[in-house]
Image (cartoon, rainbow, N blue to C red; front, side, top):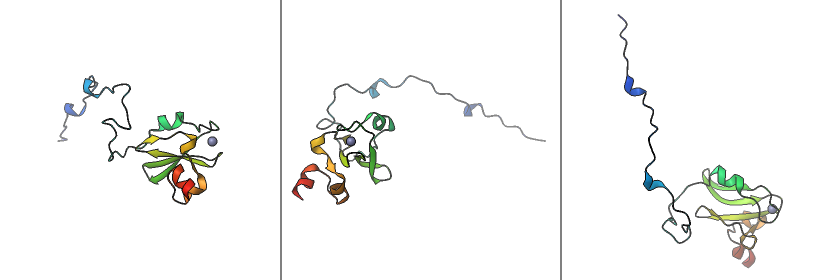
Length: 116
Ligand SMILES: [Zn+2]
């Protein structure tokens, strides 16, 4: 009567070794190297965000989102500064930081903010 179907193929646990070609090489240059591709749209990982701190006050940073999954800058609420993220690389330099007000006015670099 009741037809019982067993499908053992549904229970496959895959714990194989990872392919060796995916091992990242240390010391690659993200700015000029082959990883500096324009179309990459990978949000900064939460792990990376959690270790980044404001270079001025060492405080926590708040991501500024250009889109739900695109981080455009990292803001320090304490310093009212925003550190731009360019091609997924956070620029954690005080001289590159954009004042919060200038950032809100659309400035995305310290140079733009100074020229305003
Ligand atoms: Zn700060």
